[in-house]
Structures are given as structure tokens and as C-alpha cells.
Length: 140
Image 1 (tube, rainbow, N blue to C red):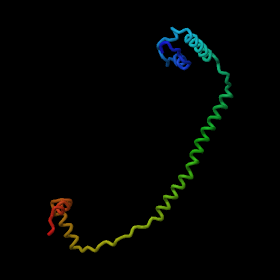
Image 2: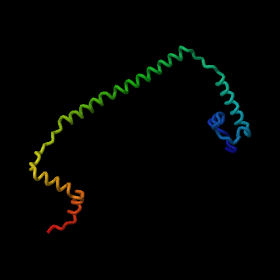
Image 3: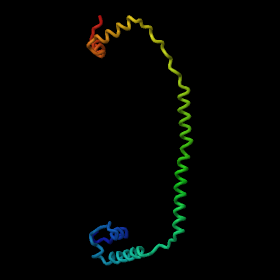
Image 4: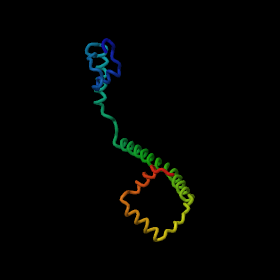
């Protein structure tokens, strides 16, 4: 801060221990006078007893609780139409979706089934190897 006077904000911050610590009010008579004036006001505010009755505080509490309860109810009620619309939309999509067409299973004889099972069991190589081999086979 140097030769500049402290602003009111800097003096207030200094009174609460959050301001500059360069000791300027000790060196400057104007800033020291303002510092002392604000310090006396601060002490006067600390010593002043608030003039509040229990009934006044209770009525304030009831008013605050009524306002906060009203907000929580109204915010929940505002979501109900949106949630209903989303549920109806999902139901409409599920109901109107066409069913997949089923393909009849091909007829397989017992001999062909046993042959497929035997070839699968008797092969020492996994099925994936057949796919890889087919990539490198040259077709005439």
C-alpha cells in the first residue's frame, strides 16, 4: 500500500484479520482515525443486544418452513405431468412395435445331426480356426 490510504474495504478486512498486513494505519494518522472509528462501531455492534422476542423468532421460523415446504411440494408436482408423458410414450412405442417374423427351423435328419455333433467333438481345433483358414484358401 505504501503512501496510499487504505480504502474502507481494506480497513474492514483488516479489522477481521483478512486485510493487508503492512501496518499502514500505524503510520498514517488519517487511516488510523478511520480504523479506530470502524473498530468502535464494530464493538458497539457486538455489544448491542438484538431486540427479538421468542414469538417473533417462532413466526419467522414458521414462515421459512412454509416457504421451503411449498417449494419442495411444487417442484415434485411439476414433474408428474412430464413423467406421465414419458411413460405413455414408452408404452405406445412398445405396443405399436411390430412382432418379428419367425422363420421355420430347417428340417434336420438324425443322421445329419449325429454327423455334425461327431465332427464337432472329434475335431481338435476350435471352430474359429476354420474361419481363419478359409481366408487363406485359394479358390480355383
